[in-house]
Amino acid sequence: MSGYLLTGDAETDLASILAFIAEDSVESALKVHERFHEVFRLLAVNPHVGHLRADLTSRPVRFFPVYSYMLVYLADTNPVEIVRILGMSRDVESVLR
Image (tube, rainbow, N blue to C red; front, top):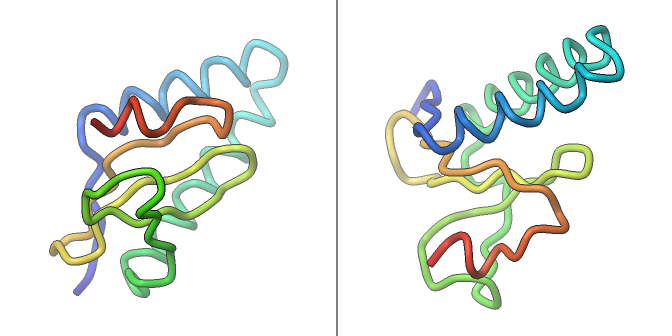
């Protein structure tokens, strides 16, 4: 298994996160952007490193934290599919229904 793919929702999530951070610091937004892509690459190589969360969803997605965000992804796809990138304060159960 190799590579990763962001869904349209995940791309929108990432763009929103980076735009919000860039309002205060473009340099910080670039660092956060790079960190997300480092983790995407990690997940592509080690897709089962994240956690299942049956308390949040019955969907077969895994969760991996990055800063104050949660990557939601499908580990058993090729390439690994990043489904969403959610702030920890979001109601994850509602978003993933």
